Image (cartoon, rainbow, N blue to C red; front, side):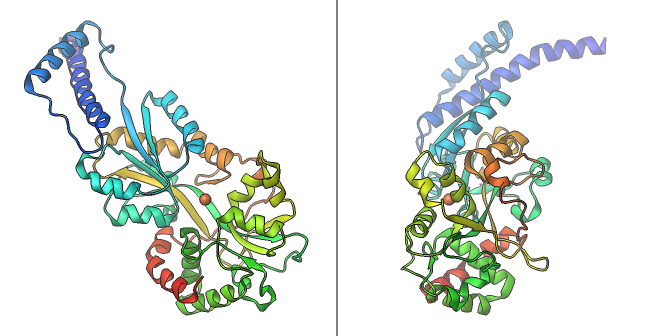
Amino acid sequence: MIIATQNLASLYWRPICESLNSIKIFTQLLQVRTMPKTKVRINSAVIGFLLFASLVGGILIPGQMALSAEINIYSHRQKFLIEPFLEEFKERTGIKVNVVYASKGLAQRLQSEGEASPADVVLTVDIGRLKIYSDKGLFQSVNSKLLNSSIPEHLRSEDNTWFGFSKRSRVIAVSTERVTPNSIRRIEDLASPEWKGRICTRPGSHVYNRALLSSIIAANGEKEAENWATAFVSNLARRPQGNDRAQLKAISVGQCDVAIINHYYYGKLVNSEDAAQREWVKNVSIIFPNQEAEDRGAHINISGGGIAKYSQNVKEAVKFLEFLVSPEAQSLYANINYEYPVIEGIALPDTLTVWGEFKEDTVPIETIADLSPKTQMIIDRTRW
Ligand code: FE
């Protein structure tokens, strides 16, 4: 009898709960449609009508009234990379994802939107950019056993506000025609007079280089790191300029023999549809520095993200972050953009396996972020 009563209750409660959820989602949708700041006021008569209609519809045709859940992502990552993730996620969960893509300005936008922000998830690259969101208090702490058990501790924040979803190594690109194999083994070697007038780099204050220099401070101390930066800058073939791809092009046209790049740019150019870009890496090879047994390993940075402080769809947003550490999503990072997965056991594309395994610097990425202001002062002083 008790069982029968429970069944009867659940028969009516489920459609009622679904209907209430439908109204909640509907009102959120109205807010999203009118983003960024205007909240639509729905008067009680409208709510009453919706409640009545949803209850009737929910009870008579359960499920048909329920609108599917949605989340909104603010992404600094590009569309070509993100879209395959969204398709896979929607297929798995039925949750639709709307994305605002922008290379800059999303942190300011999120900040100015405040509580009215429709953003649920923020995706970006580099600890330097994640740190901006966390310093401005734009993320909320996420309680997910899956994220904490899947992502190595040194690649996520201590307070669970941001998480690394893929890894990138800052490596040394060298001309195979003008640089003797094994003549560079450590990032520290780039301070040697042997490389005078032979190195190209993008500006030091770019987040990629700032993180690299922070890793050198973490390993060798501030004074040593500044000495290194001074000698490194004195070895440059030209004023710091351009992006990482431009450094590879500079090697190919003989402007320099050595450059610092993120490893995936090499992969992108090797596999480029543009024959001219493939040419830029034809006579270039990659060195993962600091690989000796007693050494710390090559510097690692992350792409990552977190959940917006005022997300109204936290449950679905957490599901999305958890999806990003699934084997399928981790494989997408490796296959679409040649980034390294943060979880073990993912099959890598040939482009990444030709380099073999390499040792990674496991200094906590949060330490790299914390060193950033000191590092920037060294970059300013050494005019990198
Ligand atoms: Fe990049």
